[in-house]
Image (cartoon, rainbow, N blue to C red; front, top):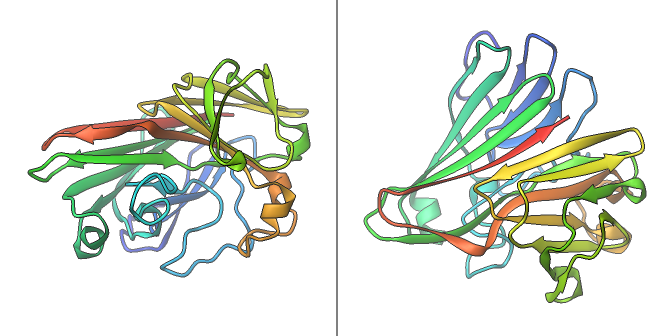
Length: 277
């Protein structure tokens, strides 16, 4: 992108080595990441609803200031349906590309969550790496509390062949089974039917393996990891999901749920998820 158009609704970035990224100002939503190897690494539903009040189904939704129904606010908060501003975008000296998007409290957000804040999403991508950094500044004069996530839909060839490594021994809450608590015993997690688990005190690195490749998933700042796939029955109830679409993605989300972030006035929190192809 030679000339920065801060008002464009959809922004397409390309690195010198051919990696590609698409970001919507609606939700600061990354909808596509194609590394230099040419393989799309994010799933985006062909039936997604692009109305201003709707969330995009796929890519990387930004969840803030509430994860799911973990509080009194609307499910998953308002960041994923807000219009973010493009702050800047530029190539870096090492061949990567960085862009920054911002969201500041306004009358609409304060009607839902009466808190002054400044949120920023910084996106850094290169030939084989995508880093998404969410930061939140408490710009008000009272303390605030929130939960958040990067709800990444990772593209897979076939969900039944996927194995997720690195969760063994972790405590989790199984939302698909009504919120029961359990401990993960699988060395490599297979996805069978509906899976909706909040893993607490998650490691900084996981590995998603398929028969023809793998993706390393790293996180910092976020203390939890959510693993989600609706399975065939629930997927059929999602009007904005392609028929059979659940077979082509696994959500592995960097999240902060079990210990909500608490910020004093002037304090900032930062959470990062990095995908390594």
